[in-house]
Length: 238
Ligand SMILES: [Zn+2]
Image 1 (tube, rainbow, N blue to C red):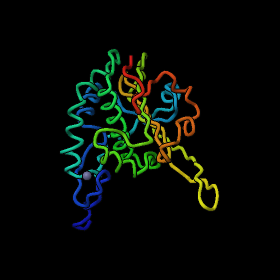
Image 2: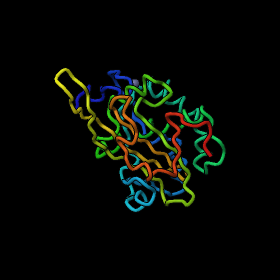
Image 3: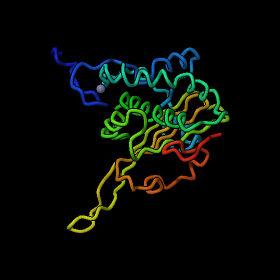
Image 4: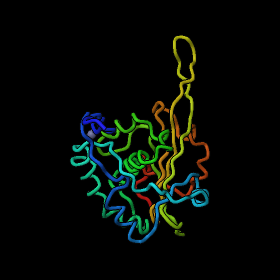
């Protein structure tokens, strides 16, 4: 262990230096979930039935991550967390009231941000959100990167535990070059967070902005119970 061992690059802003040591899941959320003795479980699948059937307890759940610098934590993500916390607690208990456009943007930001930090805690999920989207989130400040779709839903019957799932999706997209049509490889992923009654889903890709959702996720029928909140598609969610 050398003196410089803790000097790394902030995954969000690219700053080189000493990084902070944080829970992958927001600390306030850990405190909210754990006194109840309800574990967060890793899983995979697209719909709730699959997610519940494949779930297993994440033994390394409280893994600390050392990937974010102090200014990013203290001046950017911390205030964002404080801003949404009380609303999130309400939505976790049940999604009953309308979600205005600001609520949708805040929740979409929180969903992709949390997917990014939780992904870092599980090396097996490294091929999920590509690194360039971490930098884009930082550049955007308060909204998801281009190519990110966020969906929200309400789980009428409680699945025991809280679930986290992320799966890579590979796809290619044609680009017209002077030498003809070339198929470029891109990265896409689907991620799901189920926290109490709140269901959050991200489908993202780092391909050209013109790539439409069905191109990377043909089975949209599997998520028909969820409502897209990013890009903002409606004024209200009920
Ligand atoms: Zn940073």
